[in-house]
Length: 300
Image 1 (cartoon, rainbow, N blue to C red):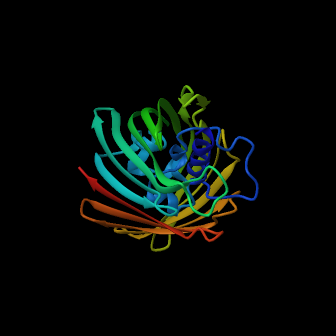
Image 2: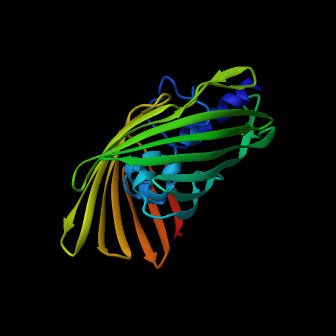
Image 3: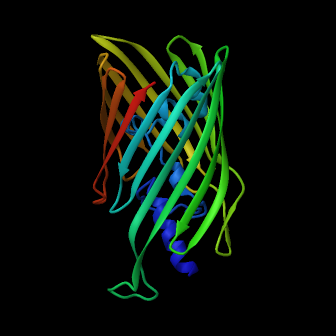
């Protein structure tokens, strides 16, 4: 049983990073590895720079971003990964005077995992694994600082075994100059969880990043970069540029660094009235296929 669960945990752990030449020494040490996947299509298209580019999905990444929101939003999305791995999510952000708040939930499912007890061509059976989380966050602006705190309840089930946990996020965004935003965040902080008889830590992560917005011929542009590290994987980094030639159109390009399975990313944002659709195209190496992400937003 422990061998089966360990194999399933490892499969879930590689979804955020896909693969690398060497296995990190603490790979598989963290439970709820799906938390390391930023759900939004916009951030994915911009090289995975979700720290400052999560926008309406800040409840999942950096609660400090909520402080700069000027209206409420309802957002929903779908992501498809390897095989039967899918993620769906929903969030609602709203204003309470100076405090900006958000609620959200997301669900990750991986099916058709094969179970073997010995080296055989045919599995004994197949099973599934899933994770679900419920999020709440709030942000407030204090001068040039935006501060945010978040809390989430977690549930994971792998075949017949399950675990429950709680985690916290904290973030800050600084606006030192016009057009310049700097941010730092600590994510997924919380007590260890027990699966069967083994204890697993949460994938506590630190992230640092910046974004600079400026005028560009025939529109506006913004460049972003960030770096971060979860406890159970190596450093990762990304950068992206977003160009807005028209109010209704955003073109996005990005690069991933310190990642052997991904490099170039791209995407588009389309707006009409109170609706916005974001799409991200993320090709991968090692015959892992192409990841497509979609997010739909409705301003309230």
